[in-house]
Length: 212
Picture 1 (cartoon, one colour):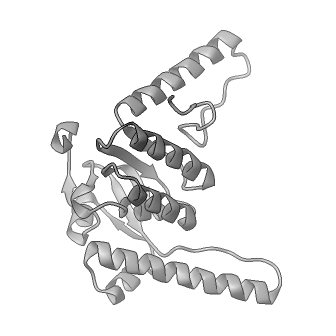
Picture 2: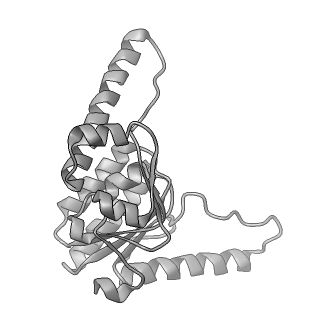
Picture 3: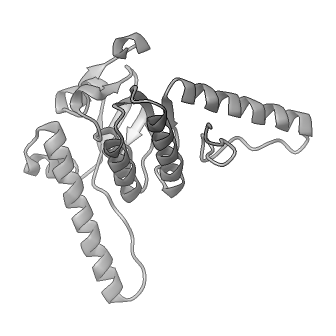
């Protein structure tokens, strides 16, 4: 059974219905959303087009496990995200590695911050980009409130998280750790060509046939 798109929305911020829309319009839009969701699943494609969050992790994890249970054929993930929670980025990263089916990560539009953690979940030959994508890397960050002792604990965890991200980028991009730390200290924007040179992706593609 296909996961229910009414529960796992394809977009974290769906276009709201207008106040004067009738029930038929709402039903038609709901049917179109379900049709699009079913089409993506039939093509073994997952669309990430929202911030990286626990809600996204739940939806993508469900889709990955369901598609993996159907067959071991490749799965394609289209990444168009401004980033978000680094912990959720690592959760999706680990789940992609956990399943048996090979996954292709394809940058489409914007792929930034925690989105690049997801990007690096597959071998370099399966990290791809469309021609007009933009890719950005930077250090995971976070905030803390409360007592000084709690803030100190949170700060230590953020430092550990940053180091884990730096080690991941160093390994997957075949770059010295000190260079990665320097590059990720501030927002570092790249074109697909620059991302290819850096080692984030291996190939720029223009159509589906190039990965089939």
